[in-house]
Length: 305
Image (tube, rainbow, N blue to C red):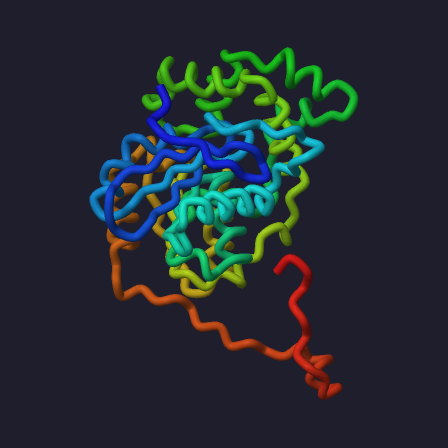
């Protein structure tokens, strides 16, 4: 049922990539928690008119490998590194990047840490700041009995219930086909462990997890006004954090804007991605005050930057 694609070897194992559209600026699509490239299928054909679309299954999800937790940290920076490896293998130096939810957090990490790789950025209800965890998630994160509950008590019915309660205002996209698809991949070898590792990363997020001020790409934020998973207040806060960003609020919509309101989603995103007048934010380095006072050389970048 997944779209056709190929595997790309990375340090996080094989990463599945679906490509479509023959010409145009590359556009990378990054999915949310427990999802895959497949849930972009209704909007991807429109993007393919203007772009070479690269829809990636992040490590641990979809058709990609599920590396052991001891070998892969399952945080946004590690996933952004895997995306960079994929782009390197595909020979793509620079691309527009669109990420939803968890994928939005990965896209932000990529744009902040590797600004030369991102030409423009679309963040759809991204996971950036600490979240208010549902009661069930708080239970499964308990060190004593949480792993047992996650492995044995998280059923397909509970998955559907959480989707309807937290992720969707309009229940129409939550079909049997949709739930069955997600459930099947969640239960592949290593799938539950990968999802649990990401959930723990979400719970440990701090206000300093992201680096929005380091983003230089033209940025569009898209938010459902009734998102119960990641509230609009996060979008307004992020708008203040990313230089020159714009915020498009989709009315009467929950967390999955591209699934609930695809026409409005495309109406907001397509013009932004095809706007040739958009320019990166110009950064003027400011010397560290201590180094300036001492007359010393510019501070070196921190390791990994």
